[in-house]
Image (cartoon, rainbow, N blue to C red; front, top):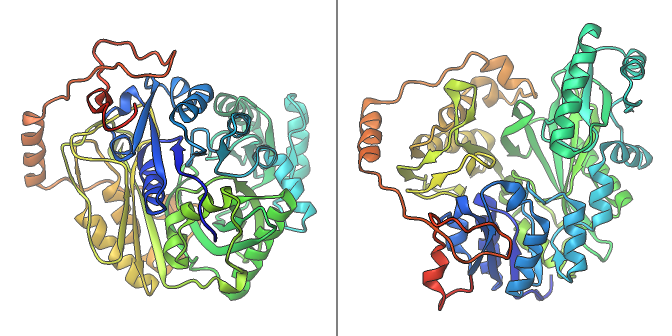
Length: 506
C-alpha cells in the first residue's frame, strides 16, 4: 500500500475500539480527535487522543448518535476522515452520507452499500443472486398476523423471526409452537421498532444448533478484494458473541476455501469497499448458509489480525485514502491460533445485567502471546448509558490447545475490582472440556453452562475491595468546552481540556 494521505482522523466512538483506532493512527503518524460525552470526560480514549471534543450529555442520542455534532466536531478540528469503529453510527448510511456531504472521508463502505446490506431482505436476495446458499425463508408478508401465520405454515415450524433492518440479536425470536406465533411476532416487532425504527421481519427456517462462522474481507477502490480466513463465533449468549477464535475448529481447507469464495462473491455483488464481514451459519451436516454482512470493523477483528499478521484498522485507513491493496489471495497465510474473550461489566449472579460503577483496582494480564484491547483505567467510572464491554483479551499460540491454555492463564491473571464482570464466566467457558474439543454451536452455553454460577470471591479480594471502596474519592467534575448546543452547561461538570488549552485544542 502507498503513502497515507490523511493527517488527522476523528474517531466517532468511545471505549476500547476508540483506543484501538487511536493506536493504529499513531503508528501511521496520523493525529487523532476523540469525541466524548459528559459521562466519558476522563475516559482513556479522551486522554489518549491528540485532541478531544465534547459532544453533549451522556445519553447516546445527544452525543455518540448525534450526526450533526459528530460532523461538526470533525470540521471544527480539521479532520479529513472519520472512523466510526463499531456500534453507534458505524452502520448508519445517513452518517456516512453526512460525512461525504461535509467533504469528510468515511472510513467504511459507501452509503448505498451500507444501506443495501443493512436491509436483511435485500442482502439475502443479493447473496442468492450471487449463487450463495441462503437459509430458506420469506420476507415480511406484511403487518397482518394472518399473513405471517400463512408464511410460517408454508415454511413449517420451527422458525426464526428476525428484524429485517438490524442485527445483534435484537428483534429475534424462535417460534416452535403455532400458539406462540402472535405474541412472539409482536415482541419481535416492538424490539425491532425500538432498536432500528423499522418493525419489518424476516421469517426463516430455524437451523438447530448451528455454528456461526464469519469471513473477514478487504476490498479497495481498484477492484482488488481478498478474504482473510474465517472466525468461529458460535459461543453466544442471547445471540451476542462472547468468545471468538480464528481459525474455526470445524473448517478444513475445503470448507475454508468455499466460505472465502462465497464471501467474496457476495461482497463483489454488493460493490463492497473497505473492511467487512460476511457471516454464515453452518449446520450439523457441514452445509453453510449466508446470514448477513456487517459493514464495519467487527469487535472480534483482533483474532484475524493475530493469525493473518495484518492490521485491519490501518488497512481500512489506507483503503479509505484511495490506496490499492498490495495483497493478493495467494499472499494470505494464516499462522497459529487466536482466541478472544469479551470482558463485560455485567453481573453473572443477576442474569448478566450491566454492572456500572467505579473501577477500584485494575490489573490487566501482560503475558507472552496475550494482547489486551482495553478502554478502561483504575479510578474510572463505568457509565450505565452504553454497551458494557470493557476490554477484549486475545491469546495467540501455535496450536489451539496452547492458545486455550494461554487464554485461561490470562483470565486468571486479570483483576477488576469495583463493577462486577464476566471474567469467571469466561474462565468457565475456555476451561470446559467440550470447548476444548471444539464441539461448538450457538447453543453451547445453554447446553453446557446453563446452570453455571460464579464462584464466591476469595476473602482477600473482598477485603481489598472494601478497603478500596472506603478510600475511594470522586473526581471533581464540570464543563466549559462543548459544541454549540451540546447541552453541557451543568455547573457540576468540568471539562479537563480547559486546563490544557495550550497543549490541545478542545
